[in-house]
Image (cartoon, rainbow over all chains, first blue to last red; front, side, top):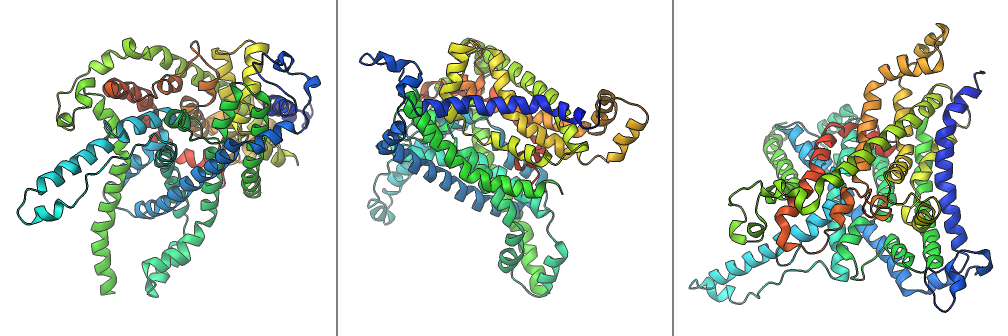
Length: 312
Length: 278
């Protein structure tokens, strides 16, 4: 066998598998997005099977673009992803710098910090929404109750009592309403993904030029200006990578929304697609194509960066 | 100089303490889950037993009865193991060819492979349901979940293996060729022993990703092939009365994986940033 054919042959199974995985379902989605296709219809039974005869052109796209839910879902997707990115990058930077020095028990601190990343998303969501954020039985509710009874106890004191009796009774926040459940999702996903940011920033910090830093210390540069002028530029690339990879993952966030927000109106694009899929396949597919476009905008930048870096 | 020394003495106590406090806060939810798993369901919601209680193993002993835990855990283990194996069987030869016989398309193929990972799963939800339910009739089977888990992780597997293989000097493989070793022999006797650490950590990381997957395993199963993600997802409702048993089953579901994860922190960076951060 020639030198050229064998390597190609070895790559073939992987390429064919991935090609099918990409083309077949996506091709079907594209096709469904241009036809009228619903799962149940008493009035128009002919729409319940996918057929070219039910061609609708861009009708599904128009329908989706005019749906209030769609714009809410897009907005909410971006809001959730943006908030998570902000929290994880800022917190990740601070923690990476903090853990990058040597101190007793550093290994254990790193292990504790990285652990949330390996918790499965379903457990993460169930754990947070029930045991931590529940307004009655979770730690959220218990903490508020504790504060209230503390304030009540302090009201009995002679002088301070007058001051504390002015305090209102606190109400625990419920994280199951439309808007608050988005905050709950942001909280739990940020908790899970901050370790990821820390890990990557830490890896990158280890390749920082120590001599340059020492020179800066001797020149009397403050800790903040060292961070601002040396460390931050060094981390520019890892930050970009963290932002892009997380965007791609979080744009398709699903388990957390499903567990925390089912039925309360808080939705992102994947969740909206799931809702449409219960009947209107045409609309679901058109929404899916929009989701692909949104993900691609981020993916192109990421792939370019990865590709450039690949061969060295 | 004195000023520098003084700030660093203060800093030597302050910053590590802060790091410890934040790390403990981050770990707290996991600790709380494990802690609660030793409380009875009744004790778990009583504020007076918040920290002091009589520990019990009852939640773990009743896991099978309450949740049918082992059936879901077996499904998770089977699907994750075989998906990892298949991904390696397909991925190793591919990464081998790409690392040692790159053509001018290799780079494009690698980038394209990654791009398949970036398709949002939800976009193809209905086609996948339709294909597997009506057409191929493999909906809710182990085979389907293994196939899907294998496919969604294949790009990462190939990518990671590629970066490990590239670190092996080409001359070693070529020397083998001179000695008349065939391709299979090259992979088996030279490549795998040399890149053993890389292959093992790739497998470990893939296994973790498969185990934690929560979209396809939930949407493409009902009962037969349902994994732990599906089991936990089914308990989303406010289950205040069952905090104890819910914590126990959650601990059992994530415990082994979190421990496995501790061993592959370093590889995680490689696997998730596609070699872009070193």
